Amino acid sequence: MVAHNYVFVGLLLLVAVGFALAPLALVALVAPRKRSPTKADVFECGVRTHGETWVRFRIQYYIYAIMFVVFDVETVFLYPWAAAYGSLGTFALVEMTVFLALLFAGLAYAWAKGVLRWA
Image (cartoon, rainbow, N blue to C red; front, side):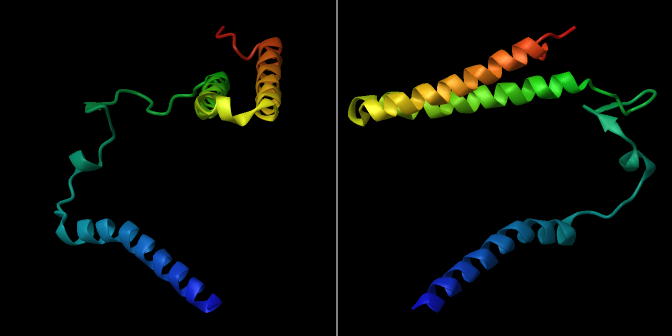
């Protein structure tokens, strides 16, 4: 009986890999193979690049984006909790208070370290 479950998981894995590889195989069979310098050239937004194409970004932009994602995920967790709050009780209120306190502590730490300043 347990082997039956593994067969199902293995079959599902094969189907998933097949779905991932089928478009690649189809493109390899159907795509035209004409090579040219124009196709090999570097384009950015459809326009030829001038000068150096590698640009260094400050790490602060990435940290700012990560913080946005963290608080965006917080909002995703808040909506279902708020929708079901009436039936959850006091324990859920305490848990959400701890969750929000941890997130706001992280925000206060980032603010104190100056991560949220652009200049």
